[in-house]
Length: 87
Image (tube, rainbow, N blue to C red; front, side):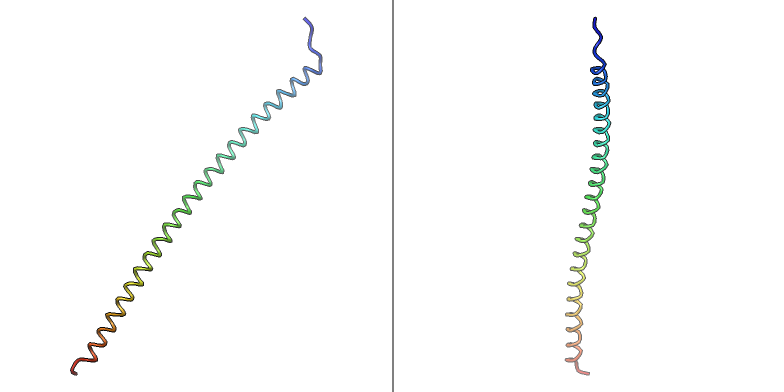
């Protein structure tokens, strides 16, 4: 049986090294992608929480504005009744 030429053996070794490097890079890429996806998910959760907090704040401000308006009406009504009383 004839031994393969040295250039073929070198090429075969380089091909094996390239395949190992390709696998290493693929694994590294998948790890980085996984990290980015986890970070993205965490950021989405934070944004959702902030949106919920803003919605709650706006609802609370609206309720306060309505209560303030009602209180002003009560004060105006009480003031007008006091002016109309017989003292």
